[in-house]
Image 1 (cartoon, rainbow, N blue to C red):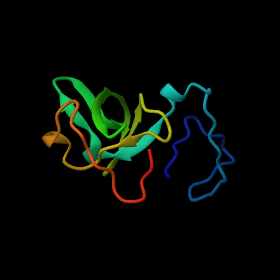
Image 2: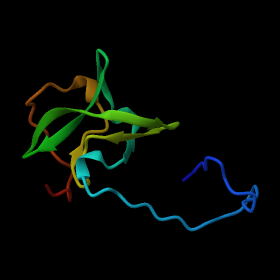
Image 3: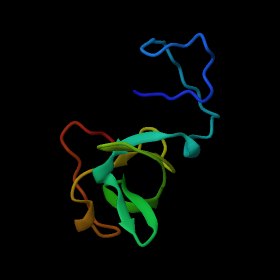
Image 4: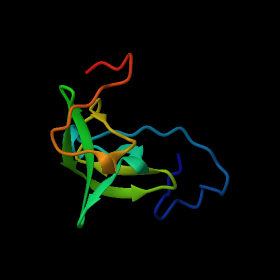
Length: 105
């Protein structure tokens, strides 16, 4: 993970390492979650992801906070939710989906 410090103290030098822990404000809907960039389904100006609930695909709007090469950080998802990461442009709302073996909902 790369972390940038705004206005770092002079004691911090290039190449130093650190142990970092992140905490959240407790509201699971605003936590940053990193997902594959391929999971983003864009309709007009609204980025969304397909969330699976009871074997059904539901489109959920998300807010993109940070873009990486192959991952994106978003808000609007809860930890533990199952999202679809491949073939997102071929799905339709309410479509039944099958989870891979071993994935429990």
